[in-house]
Length: 430
Length: 33
Image: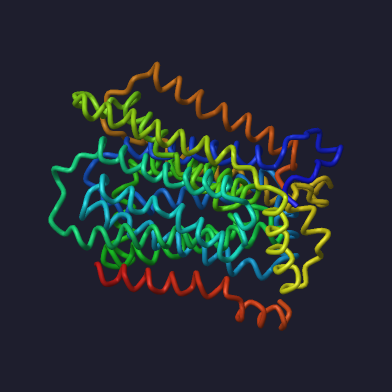
């Protein structure tokens, strides 16, 4: 199912496992980079408003990127063929929104050092659901289990060490229990969010169609929760208006987030959530690189702190390597196919067609789709929103290392180009 | 959406696990506020 040879027209013989690993790592780069623009936001704004700005930016990008890559005709056709999955895409967006709000409470109450590793356990929750509901890792043998489970634990452990080494804990208030519960709750919600991801992809849905619907559940729920937390919609709009000079930064972060999220979705499709999510959760390394190299956040760090950062990074990289080397064997792939057949039987899907899409060979992907006039409108609107926000934007006066920024921007754009090309050549973004 | 698909959705464990987690998560969030 997963590693069937690619059709000749796709011009690539790359295995789907390798493609999925590349996608997971590219996701980490972009999800980590998404944190960088938000560092330029001036202090004095509610974290709910910054989060709302990021989700609004993500909403714009989640319509624009799929439209640019595949066209609305393809997206509507895909949704029309599997309408039941709209429910799961909306549900996933809602789960993300509640989880994200919980993380704000967690950071407020226990600080990032304790909160981050706790909600980073979402990859272990996702791994559990992948095993229980989608037969991931079934029949993989002791070696496969050791690589994936060991790798996932290493990434969570590395995240814990990095968080302890880098977070400033001095402003941690005393409501520890509330913060810990909130962080654990966020981890469970985020891990459970991957159930809809995996369900959609073993049913042959395109990740680009999935995120287009996901964003409605996400924006709607975030809007509702933010309105509740800031004391009503009128307060919310007043806060957004006040935040207008800095909104470009969270919007830009939201845009980067969507690129990372798309790669994460392709990783979940081609290597499953048990392998794909821990890999993309190494995003903390990239966030750390931006903070340390570009924004010089850790100057004056003690030797112990530096040793902890190197140790945490090393453990995290070792975990990612272990998972990268854990190709699913034949017996595991048989189990993956059983999970796919279950969806086909339950929702009367064409098994041959779904099987082809799951193997990266969507019959629709090779066909040219007519471009519509409203696609130009969507693109122009998105660009217009970003340009309008960029005009008159103010940022926090931070010392920024330009040489490191150039290096990291190149290091961020390169995986986009390489992984985007690999995806196009091997699957035509299917 | 066809009627049998609605029944298939409503009797799908893959729906109720995330729904239950979403409800519990929302209750937790409202309690913590």
